[in-house]
Structure formats: structure tokens, C-alpha cells
Length: 140
Image: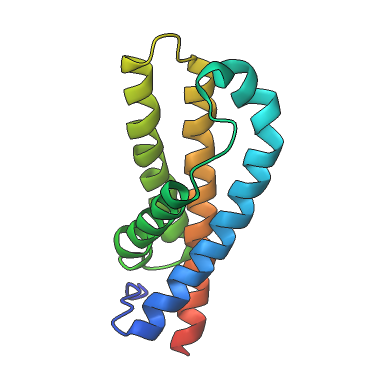
């Protein structure tokens, strides 16, 4: 059985973080660009901002991706485990946001919740898989 990836050095952590960030940001940008007009604006446009808060977005991505490295990539034995753990982590994190909105925001649509849960699982799983491979490559 392969040993878990334990990026004990700053170099390994940075490699995993950068790979996860690049993958996640590219995929999420494509998703949001594609789905904003198709899903989000028609469903929740009445509460969406016209612009977005760059600082809040940067804080989300930074905190989320550090969590992916620490809780997903580091303990994963291989790429398949990183993908599975990433999908689970994404599901839990996106569920926290969407199900809280479902419970507290009047008229929050189930189609947004279900799409976000699926997207969070896929994008986090793929990002973790890429990052795990990148961190392994840096290990030599």
C-alpha cells in the first residue's frame, strides 16, 4: 500500500496548494461564467450582487484550498483517494453553505442547492487529484 502524501516541507505544501488553486480557479471560473446566466441569475438574481466582493472571494479560495491540502491531499495515499476525499470534502463544504441557505433564505431554490453540491464534489475532487499528483512529482 502506498504511503500517504505527507507534505512535511513548505515546498510540498506550496506545490499542492498551487496545483489545487490553479485547477480549482480555472474550473470554477469556467463554471461560474457558464452557469451565472443559466442557473444563478434566474434562480437567485434578486439577491445577487451586481459585482462581487474580491476580498471575500479571495478569502474563501485561500481558506478552502488550505483545507483541501490539509484535510484531503495530505492524508491521501494515492490520486484515487485524493479524488474521493476531495469529492467528500467538497460535498460537505458546499452543503454547509447551500443547506444553510435552504434553511434560512426565503425562496432559496433546490435546483441551486443540488447543482452546487454536485459541482462542489466534482471540482474539489478533480483539484485534489491534480494537486496530489503535483505534490508527488515534487517529492521525486
